[in-house]
Image 1: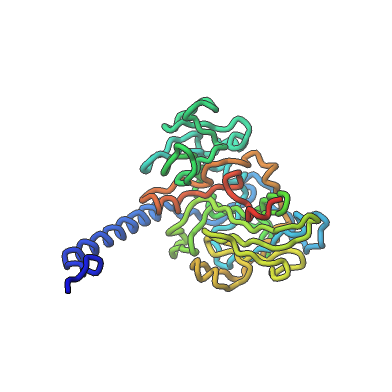
Image 2: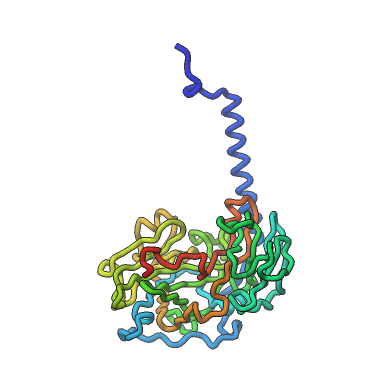
Length: 358
């Protein structure tokens, strides 16, 4: 009986060609990762508040059951004891960035010099503009894109924009390690938490200057795989009376982990968050299946009581920026997308599960 084509065994030549194709693909990815690693210069220790022109965080206080639900439900975050990339303020990130328009390949068109980005022009007030070639243009004209448009490189659903093209903030390497704590000892009070309160929920955004996937650092503390900028979050679902119903822990890709309020680990009314080493993904416990799936490491380290310093995103002039908080990645498209800075709080990034909104 003849063997059907569906079950025909491949010839040695076909096997060899497939093997070579796989090896070539692996080598291309390794080369791209190497080039990225070479670009990631050692950023040194966290910077002081004075380096960012800030006064630093307030002293740690024990929660007292505040009347304001935005304070009452602010999380207690455990940073990993080996964390090298600490939280950072958006003001510091922007103040030490340049705005670029990324183009196909490896190129960028500089829109501002380093340290000259106007935060107000990232948001609704007279936003920066660019055409496809990276030239300033008249807002509203055909082919003219504003900083408030969805322009993060590699994202889908951006109309005529495809691939690597789009706005990206490129921060000075020295500020990737975040802000040093304003207090000494086991408590971290360096950077604020960013709050987005909407009908039905409160989202707490954590911002970092760099994300190193899975905490991948070499012996010198250089991230070997990651991207500039990092926005992580948890959300608290509220009923119409303002009572908490559940908490959403956001990790990397995919839907968040949802826990009923009664099941959520807390310090009094403050949900507990374990921050992934380097990745900063949010988890409810020190160990769990989510960390294993994401190859993340979490551990009890410095405590970050986020209620000490809370900033409302709606009060920030950059709110609504649709570009990348971090440089545009290079290399094969799928890899370069992962190496590109993320979207921040804006109409293009869902702050909480859609069904929570009232």
